[in-house]
Amino acid sequence: MAIGYYEFTVSPADDGITLKSFLRRICGLSARSMKVIRYGGGSISRNGIELRAHHILHTGDIIKVRLPKEEQSDITPVEGKLDILFEDDRLLIVNKPAYMPVHPTKIHQLDTLANIVMYYQQSRGESYPFRALNRLDKDTSGIVILAKDRIAYNMVFSTVKKTYVAICEGIITGNGIIDLPIGAAPDSKIERCVREDGVAAITHYEPIQSFGRYTLCKVWLETGRTHQIRCHMSAIGHPLAGDTMYGGSSELIRRQALHCQSITLPHPITKELIELTTPYPEDFSAIFKSTSP
Image 1: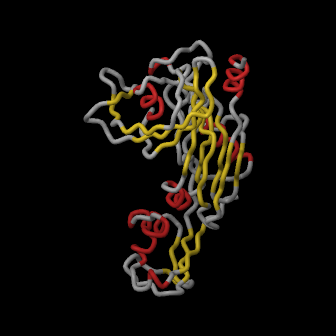
Image 2: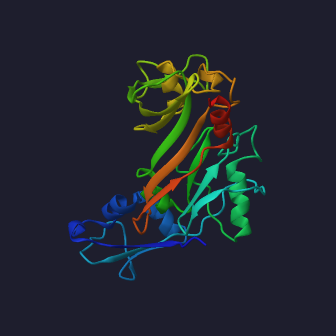
Image 3: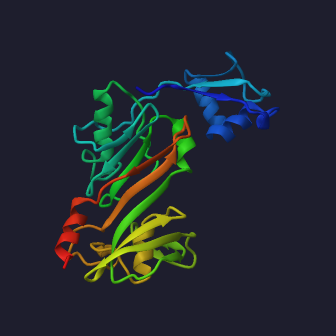
């Protein structure tokens, strides 16, 4: 069951600042979010006494933020299997299979990760909006992190480090960094391309093993652009296996061979480092087996 409050102690470094400034720095709460908490049934107090955003804090003050109860997202609950990697009062971290969207869309309303999470919540008597800290394409498998409340989301969002594995076409012999801007491809609402007027995007890759005409790579990002790994690897002549949108062949796999394999993040309360790694998905293992000498 999610716990609806947080406690923070004012340190000497924060002595003399306003509550508004303190909460913005410590847990990412905006002035608007503070109003939503206060007028939505929650409260913000110092040493047991409610206070306003402009009040000055002092070393040793105990700030307690009690969150209002949040309703579930307007998503239809659907029974299904969840591969849970970690769960506590603040976070739910799962391993999403390929071919499953994270969020409902017009053509995927009942077969998404969100549908299954809503059902899982109801079965446990919990209620919180579906908040995914990272989004994977429908055909990309791997780790998805869900925050059970808005403060957990704010505190974790910018601290997550994700590592992907990708099966790329061609033989890659050395580590590399791709620093190429990405923007929308002409005449497409989905596809991305490298273009001078795009947004900055930086991708790191490191070959793990080559087999046949393919290379298994570890990939991590400095930026998080739509289709960044897929677009960047294609741009350097090594599209992902199965990624027909970006020039890959579907000879070995029916989807882009991309898996979010591991994550690290500090817990929003304890600050202890959470480190999670998943095995290769079955279709990756099948490729390794079919291409082995």
